[in-house]
Length: 469
RNA sequence: GCUCCCAUCGUCUAGCGGCCUAGGACACCACCCUCUCAAGGUGGCGGCACGGGUUCAAAUCCCGUUGGGAGUGCCA
Image (cartoon, rainbow, N blue to C red; front, side):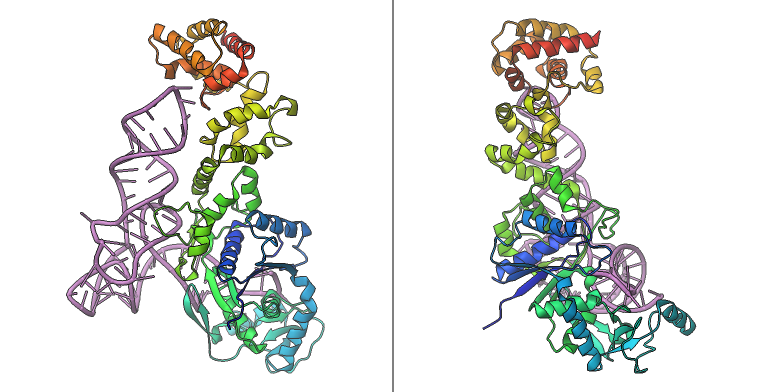
């Protein structure tokens, strides 16, 4: 019987959680689900200078947001690489004992100097046969054998590396600590990893790691190197330059299913004419061999479009629930006592088709939750520019004093005034809209006016009229 | 420089030798609908990098050119 496939995702906690990492995690997760295998989360926290526990929690939270956590039995971990340090060193010593590795006392400067003299690049294997033992400041290097190393990659096919192009790389630093290349392999072996699915930037590491696997007496895993995500300059997404933090998108009101769906269309596509598909369909159809070979541009505009789609597809009550973080609490732009959940619930269906990000919601309804709206100067200037603007607004106001206060009746009033002046409703409503909402665009006007009530409405019109003079 | 990877509309992709006068999505444009803005509907713009082969037939296979990308750390 075949063994249970074991995938792993091994981020290092050195900053916000990267969307590229999220995609890699999703790939591994889906593959584990498909094969009824295991998704191992391993935090590679061996770089003390850059590690921080807060980032570890960030990774956990972000993964959970994507639906990847220990609530599902396919999830295993998190494991911490630092906990395995002794084993890493032990493995290195084993490699040394069997002659697969050797110590070297050259400093980086020495190596550069030698390289320059030889007119070559990198380390030349100077200490290969010097028979050095361990010692302070000495690094342990892997003795790269002659020949070639072929990496069987599930997305790229077989990739051949001539071993002569691979220098004797470092396993243990001068201070005795293991480097990524080694620790990563030892952990994979220890944790019984059978499939390594990671970003393409690791492809050059694969032959080296494969040699370590073999030297340690194990068959290497199934490799898969997926293309990187790039920015508009076609450069790999970087934390410094680009907006890559999953947390940030979440803060802006990107929905988890939208993010997952969008990420999965980068480098791959579900069957059929729609890219917006349930995660179950993706899980059912995803296949590494059909993953694209070239980098994909992370297009925020398209992400937003996906998000808007998901927002619209939600039942209203769910939409209202999702909006809550932006309506109450620290993020809300109004005073807590001014906010009325009932009023929001009424207008929610009207804003649902108008937002791409949940964070866009407050600015669309804020005029309902304050004494007077903040009037946008440009919108005001434009709306009140026509010579009929003030006059018609006054007529509307006077009619509003006595008319029935329902959306239909209010609309009829405005239409009647418009007819009198031979103006279409589309034009007529502009000054009214600015007076009521402070803006020239927004949800349909008459429903909110009815919600606001007669007194508040008249007050706003008067204030706008006064501003005019 | 060296090693490796890659190449279909602006972008994400479908396409695995004939269903391709290359399909879909985002963006963009136009029209319809409409109280503004959206949403929705209809239509449009737009692509197989180039050159050689192989084949009755190539976006699909091979070679080369060009152009991109990644790596080249005692980071991960």
